[in-house]
Amino acid sequence: MKIAVVGIGKLGQRHLDKWKEVADVEVVGVVARNKDKLQVVAEKYNVQPFTSLEELLNQVDVDVVDVCTPTVTHGEFVKQAAQAKKHVICEKPLALTSNEATEMIQACEENDVQLLVGHTLRFFPEYANAREQVKNGAIGKPGVVRLTRGVPFPTGRDWYADEEQSGGLFLDLGSHEFDWLQWTFGDVTRVMAKHVKRDHQDEQLEYGFVTLRMADGTIAYVELSWAETKFQATYELAGNKGMITYDHNATIPISLNLRSSGQAVQMPKSLMHKDPYQRQFEHFLDCIAGKAEPIVTATDALKAIEIAEAAVQSSETGQPVTLAEGGR
Image (cartoon, rainbow, N blue to C red; front, side, top):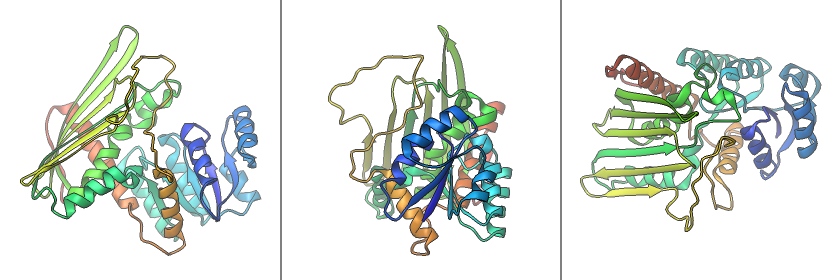
């Protein structure tokens, strides 16, 4: 399978690293607009550099375009790849808005290509197994669940902190939990959210709290933070027969917490032989080859955006937002 990677930021380079570990894959090109950095990355990974997706599509044979660029640019690259009849892998969130995401899905459907979205949380064993336990009735009837996700405030990549480019805290960070919740408990019917931003001693801090009512009656509380000193994520899933808990940092014996203005975007680490990104990519290739059905669909990704939009609306109006059945 011939892959082209669009984007050379931290995620783009993580994708390049992981594609090297997937069997029967050849990365035929990498696309970026910063020529100097592009040349460095192309030499590092021994791939052909291109300054536009159009240039790459005209010069090399490619089966799949892997989009790892800022969220605001996802639409243009996904539509361009689809019109060229190439399958697409796109990092989450799929788009800045649900309207744009719908257009992207339609473009891929009209051109008969697959659109696979990187909601990687579904490939983390601790989250996938928790969902399986819930579905198998291990905690009985779910009642109240609580999830947290926090990282240092995004620096070094200004677009993360720019809501017009990343969608902000609820979309960029919250879409992880929103997607996992709907995968595990079904559609979200009602959303209430609070959002706090602070400048503290020349340091920006941001916090969000979202209450969600699920279609099955489960109440979910999601805490999101761009105010941590390091990556952290937890969950507590309570039902009438028991509880499942998880803390990402529980197994770290020694921890040093320092704030740094030079913090890069932080992502969770995995000690697995095949980390979640590699497992995700192998699954995506099986889907493209017709060997598997997608664990996460583009429609699932659209619903996560709609939940984030509801959270933003609620935080701005101070009122709950009701979603129709199906997350819309």
